[in-house]
Amino acid sequence: MMALSGYPLGISVQAVDVVDNKIVDPVTKHIINNSLDRVIEEVNAITVEFESIPEDLLELVHGSGKLKPSVEAILTGADRVREKKLLEKLEIANCPFEIVTDVEELDAAVDKLGEKLIIKASRDGYDGYGQWRLQNQSDLPELKLKLSKLNLHKVPLIVEKMLNFDRELSLVAVRSSKGDIAYYPLAENLHYQGQLHVSIAPAPKVDEALSQQAQEIFNKLAESLDYVGVLAVEFFQIGEQLLVNEIAPRVHNSGHWTMQGSDTCQFENHLRAVRGLPLGSTKVTSPTAMINIIGCKDFARDMLSIPGCHLHWYGKTPRKKRKMGHFNLCADNYAELGNTMLALAEYVPIEYFPMLKDEAARLL
Ligand code: ATP
Ligand code: MG
Ligand code: MG
Image 1 (tube, rainbow, N blue to C red):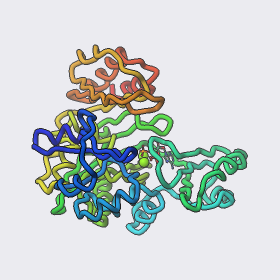
Image 2 (cartoon, helix red, strand yellow):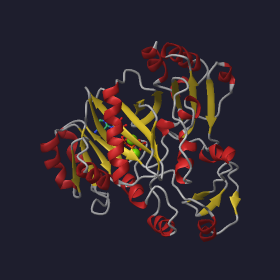
Image 3 (cartoon, helix red, strand yellow):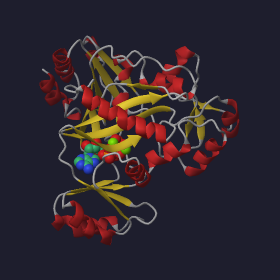
């Protein structure tokens, strides 16, 4: 999606497959016969689309001076211990937590935080992977046994109090190399089994004070990291307060709606920022629902007859819980958006879209 948005600007994007150490064309998926060193030398800018980059590769690209956002920002997003330390240093409200490097410390964590916990591996987790939930203290011995198989001294656990929040929101915004910031509006995010299924943007029922609060948190983080590019901040809303859940130093799934719902999408704005170009307008063109397509095989495209329905299919091999693509649904107002979501529900294999109908009903 980043490569596609760069094309009209004359920016060509090459991707490094960090698993197989290959350079690929991200659109055709063809392998580009070039060495990593040559690519690093030839390109104007280097960026990341996920934060768990092997450290030797990260060091190598950092050494080129072309990496944006900075290595510090990427490492902060990749490691929950660093992330929590930054939030504490900047005095940004977040979820109460303990760092655990030995399973025996879990009893003390329960004493402090209560028996309902979310336990997160500090590295390499996404979409709810690398997480364990504790509902009752009586389940603790079994969980300790499971977690004792991990090397917690190398990859500690972040143990969080399970919060009873009102809803989840995220702020996606972009900062240029000159320090200009353009914010998209807050999106409301619906998760199912730890994975994002639906984002509604702009989030309904957001007043000026709430969006100010989110933007101030973004500013603190982005300025302290001297951030360049798109940065996403995930929040839990409790009453009028926002607590940061985590940050993502990259374009974000909860910003995919901007491909149809905003003047300039997050991918283009990220490219503009890392190439030192002026940022594009983040004005909302219509309320948009982003619906992830998760874990299901390809299907007929008949839903494209629905006005305002846009499909982004990623062409990946299907796997359980894998994000295969997404829909962006656009409408003139929330009620119409709800109806558009109900219309979509008639076309898709509904078992893969557990949030769709309920969320539609809330918007009507
Ligand atoms: P992502 O795909 O966003 O990177 P992740 O695997 O890094 O996800 P988190 O964002 O930390 O994980 O958690 C996934 C989801 O689990 C959250 O969006 C939220 O729905 C739920 N969750 C996480 N932490 C808590 C908490 N402390 N209390 C309640 N729910 C939580
Ligand atoms: Mg995450
Ligand atoms: Mg998250």
